[in-house]
Every structure is written in structure tokens, then in C-alpha cells.
Length: 389
Ligand SMILES: [Zn+2]
Image (cartoon, protein in one colour):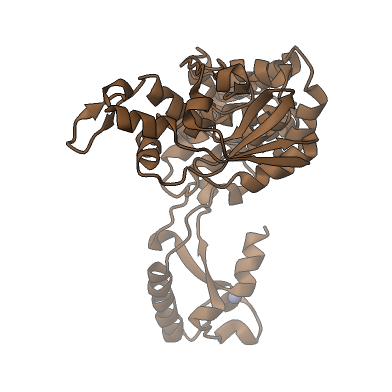
């Protein structure tokens, strides 16, 4: 990869012919048309949301460094911004009067309201720019290295940059568009911000069968004009989840629906029954992990570890131990009721607290409570034997 350092360009040069469109996906241009500030793969403009535009202008007025800008050379006299899009956009938006800053008297001032000297100071501020030319994998590596300042690009934003093309453009129109009327339905199942490419990332991970296969999928489909496969797989997963569980529950948002679909979509479910079970388990105070309920039900209510069912606390165990041990000593039997029924040396053995475990007399799955009335201390051997039944 070849890099060239430019130090003679100023804010004036870069903001010449600056074009801003607040609509999603519209290009932003500068440097008299030579620079694409927001290439199709770039993230949405984030600085204005985060109130970081004003500090950019303050930095310039105070002669603080703005940091390095990175451009990639795509053709003769044609460049795209790799890193620095938001700083450049803030500069361009200010110079073209899109927002105001507070002056030293606390008054809001747009660019044209500043005194001439300040205007010149901003326009003549020198920028430090690295121009990069190279192969895709080199640029990828570089991207990862420079992705350190400002609002960092996340993994999906990075992939969108690397595999930019018709597929990404089309996919973003659907999945990165917060005004898409379907978005509300989708975000009942998926966590994330469409603008940060988090819905797109989930959609891709489903069709690619895993986050780790997203880059391969994007590479393979990079030049596709259609996102048909992505869309139909995505809709299939969402429709399946809706079919099995009915209207979405808040607790199911962000579950691995793609994986769950792959594992369980050939199993038939009765929606009315699954809803009854979901609601019973949501209301069950012993279920510690409400989010595990859906997979638990899909798997036929076998893997209780998904629910993190509440266990007896130490106070309950100690109290129960004291009661059992006192009664056992009075009767001259073991404090493990199963040992006491046996016919061996353990018949009269008094186990220490640490040698025993708490057990539900009536199993939790059969409605047994996790309180002292349903708690029984057993020696570890008998507790294990009972658990395996
Ligand atoms: Zn025992």
C-alpha cells in the first residue's frame, strides 16, 4: 500500500463545493468535487446526534489539532474519506451556515456572523491528510489500525466499507433505514440501532449462519444487485418466531433467532400452548433467567439450566440443617433422611452442613416452591442419586 502525507490543504480547500444532504444514503462531496465525503459504505452522520460538531469548530479556532484525516485514492483526482468523515462534515456544515456556535460572550453565531478574522482563521486552518492507495485487504488492515479515534467504526461498518458495492447499498436501504415501516416489528426481535448497522448485521448473520461467516457472505454477494436471499431468509426467521410465540414479548428481544430457527423450525408447536407456557414461566418467581424461557420451551422444556431456577439460599439451608440435625440426634438416626432409612454404617451418621445439599421435596418443575417448607437437606450421595432419577 502506498501512502502520501498532505499538509497543505486547508478547511477552505476541503469545503469548496461542499454538499450536504440530511437524507439517509445521500453522498456528501467536497474539495471541488474530487472528494466523496460520505461514500455509500460510510456510516450515517453521527456527530450532530452526539453534539460533537461544536468542539470541532472550537478546536480549529483554538489551533488545537483535529487529528489525521485518511482518504483513499479511487481514481485520478478522485478520493473517498476513510476516516474523518464526521470532522469534515462538521466543518462543511459550519462553513455553509448549518449550525451555530457560542462565541466568547455566550452568543450563538453562525459562520457568516463571525468577524472576518475568525472566518479566515477557520478557512485557513491546515489539515493533515494521509492519502492511501492499495488493495482491499491492505485497506482492511489499515482501517482496523486507524479505527481508534472519535466514534469508532464498529465491525459491521468496517465490513460495509470493505465490501462496498450494489449489495451493501441495497441492503442498507432496507435494514439501516430507521424510517422503514417494518423496523418496529423487527426491533421487537432484534436489539440494536439501524443507523449503526446493527439490524443489518443481525440479518446478515442469520442468512450467513453465524457472525463469523458475514464477511464471506458479503464478499460472495458483493456485486449482486438483488438482496432477495437475505430478505427472504430474514422474513422467514421473523415469521417463524411470530408463528411459534405469537405477539412478541419484551424478554425475547435480542435472542439468537437465526440459530433457534435453524435448530427448531422442523418441530411443530401449538402457539396457544407456547403462549400459556411463556406466561406461566414469566410469572414464576423462581425463574431467574426470563430470556431463557423461549429456548427452554422450543427444546421441549428439558434443559432447565436455561432458566437459572433460583436455588435455596444459605440462610434457608442452615435453618433446615439445624432442624433436621436436632431431630436426628434426638432420634439417634442420621440427619440425612435417606441414610436414616438405610442399613449400613451411615444409618446413624450426622453429616456436617458442608457434606449436604439442599433438595426440593416437591420438584420445582412440578410446582414445588423454593422455600424452607419444601427444602430438605440430603447427603451429597443421596442428593445426586435423587437428581438423576
Ligand atoms: Zn444420605
